[in-house]
Length: 309
Image 1 (cartoon, helix red, strand yellow):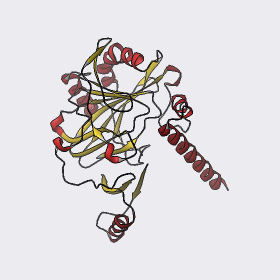
Image 2 (tube, helix red, strand yellow):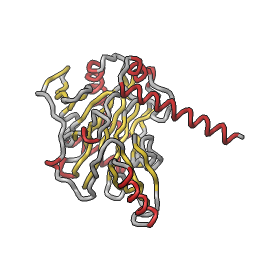
Image 3 (spheres, rainbow, N blue to C red):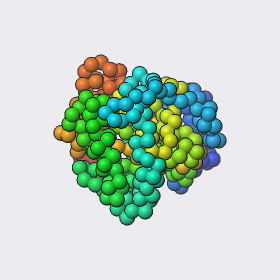
Image 4 (cartoon, helix red, strand yellow):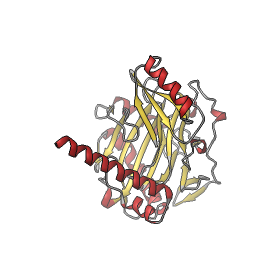
């Protein structure tokens, strides 16, 4: 779990004192997350390593290993060597398609990069809604993506995740710029049966990017090497995140759920059935997430009750 606190500007006496306290008392990873004109201090449990503010070298990052290429119903894939089910889908979008999607997101008046609080760390999302609630939001982007999703991606995902009623629930574009968001802390996409992340950038545009973290230990994080148009696909049970050390990164994120749940939102407080089933099977991560969601909901209910008094 990630604890985030918005403090005064970096270098202020309050911030400096807090950093010294944490460095002595809490053996965790400590780094700065820059968000517009404010700095937020993120404290991530499970690691004694510090994240350097200087750019890391791409070749020094631990990488996800993949099996040999295979083909499933016309979709080329490479299975990730991770404890959870995950796949690399090379060239899901052509280079031209990926470039067009990114350009449209930056220029289409129906596409807006929002700054509402993120569900993971409560910091500005810097995400652009593409598809939501069964309806296109960024219409020009949806026109480019529709044949890819309906003709290639859906048949593949329905087979891979053994769900014939799987549908696109939400799609959005996230950006990670030097003056905005640089990280999305490790989390689970419990609200979706399947997640597909498509790179809209060339590998040379940034250092870092998407990572999978199979355990609660931050040292287990492995980065995905994605060329422009490549996609990484995984289920609700894979812990993952994003960390950009330098450069600018754009990605397309698509969430898929069974048809009966296609209007489910990330912000809903109810536990989705596929995640509850995993908890009922005794899967540790799902049990923890269900307990955390229950605790959060209880806290919100108590706070609302106090506010009414």
